Image 1 (cartoon, rainbow, N blue to C red):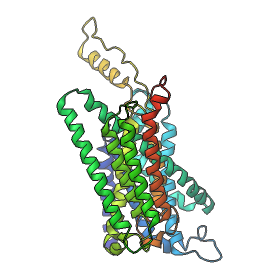
Image 2: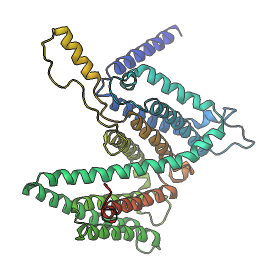
Image 3: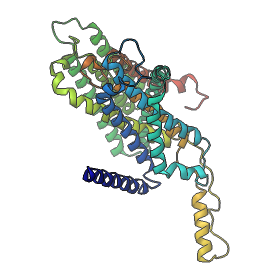
Image 4: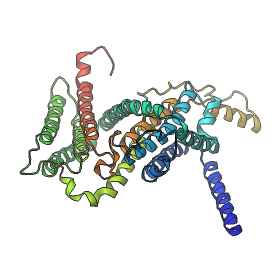
Length: 416
């Protein structure tokens, strides 16, 4: 017993030292990666609790206060939502606290990049406290998460459009034959991949001998949008580039596949159900990895994008050289002052807001949009709500892309 207690104490001490070493090594440049790591940790905790916490939560009186104990799936969903709520509150508090930070001289700049031990402790406390709040608050958060998730997906679409148009403008700006050929090659590759993808979708999700009219409608509708992108882009009045149209076409076809792949495994038109046992673990891992990567991209891209609530660049004071030479100490002090007066490179508040919305989205992913978690073998993002979310997201992407092409023609006096 004495040896076991000593071993436990040594392990705890080593764990604390390891955490202290990690958080002390987080610099200004790696702060965004650290936030992404903390978000990834929340996903792992949610996944683990979804698998193992149900028997424990059944014994908690303020959670299981029903006359008849709910199914195991209810407790699994509840555990995920409680961790997600703690994560949401953590990043929302940071987002509110960081409103108005415009330069590195602001004391809150150091708080955004430092204090990681305290941040990890506060995050743990918030997540633990969520298991002591009543079910009514969790129900309210569950309903709100569906709207927050939709907003997160919309932000992703806007970021994608911003990235694609920026990519095209950069290569066209070189005004060299090599880059024009590169545009053509990439566009052709995207279109070949798009139509090959559509053939795969017909093979997997419209099997012969089955009435799969809904799946056929989804695939054909996506193909119509792909053709419409090309027609509008190449119209003389628009005079657009084929690169953005090809990339968005491939993305819409991917969303169509993602939606069809989310159909229940027992649905006769889902060709993946034949391999459900083989892909269960892989689908779970890929679902979590895709969520983490999409959130990392959205947070970093949105935070640094000049088109999405980034703080305006302020002029740097004292850019010129001094008229009289200064001593070394004074020169270093002036250099430090200039460094602190630099404007921040991205919106800290919006950066944390993206993680807040992503917390809602990840909860919906892990719970099948709060439907029965177990209806498809505990796979991630499987069920009819997930199908329609993906399909509608594809349609919203198409609508926004078409609007980005025709808006300058409809409103020529406005800048887009």
